[in-house]
Image 1 (cartoon, rainbow, N blue to C red):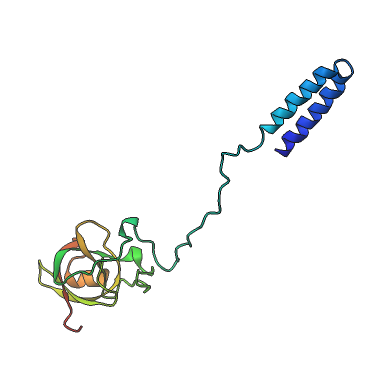
Image 2 (image 1 turned 180 degrees about the vertical axis):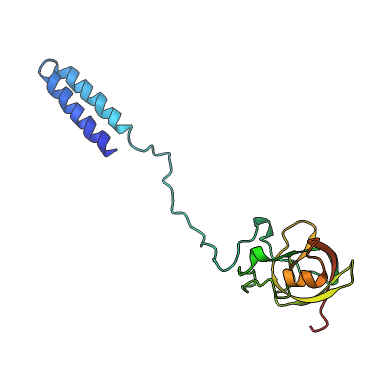
Length: 176
């Protein structure tokens, strides 16, 4: 904008100097016309100046981001609960869980949408009767129609690593 003002002023000086000797009235009209054009370079008053925006703090690198659809507080689950479970392992090894604990696929842990972290639950594979006790340390699963994600160690103990999923029953552990 400052460059436009300098250019307009230079052009105005040239025009005024060139025409002022021959036709002073024409020079004055031309000056008024050119100066009016410079005024349109100003910001119109109806355009609001942006106000200061508030920024939200960046998510902590220690807690993985949860999908937007899962922002509401979890509803407490009632046990026993029956449904499909899946397992997760190597791709999550060493990553931070929602509880803040580092995921270890060799531990007997599980993810559940709403059970409190630290809860100990008994998981039974209904197709073969095998059971394992796990600790809830993560949120999930985020696949539809699943009630839990198990660590690889828990999935091996239940005999479900090959199939990837199993119909299970979750119950409160007798040690709790």
